[in-house]
Length: 98
Image (cartoon, rainbow, N blue to C red; front, side, top):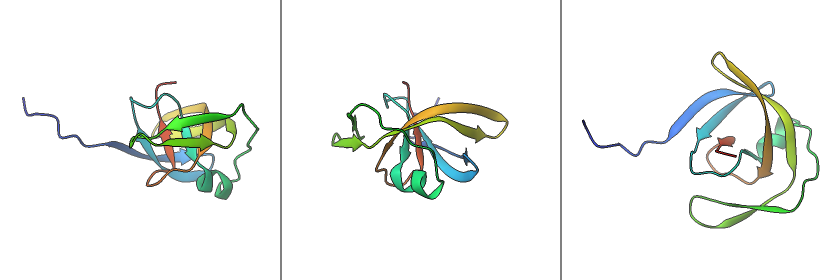
């Protein structure tokens, strides 16, 4: 068996009605949507309790709200997911292990 390649699991899908690049990250402790994507997709945001996400590089990142019950579609899979809104680079959404 070959060693793991270390490749990231990136999927094409839809968040709301917008196409999105989705990273599946089993090390993430929550689900996150990029603040720029949330604004351009006009996701309904609510104020949440102050929270901080730890990014892969170890840096803390403030979350600026919650997008509750956001529709997500990846292929034939559909769901409604709550996302913490924060600045992300390279992905529109991170699906973690909340």
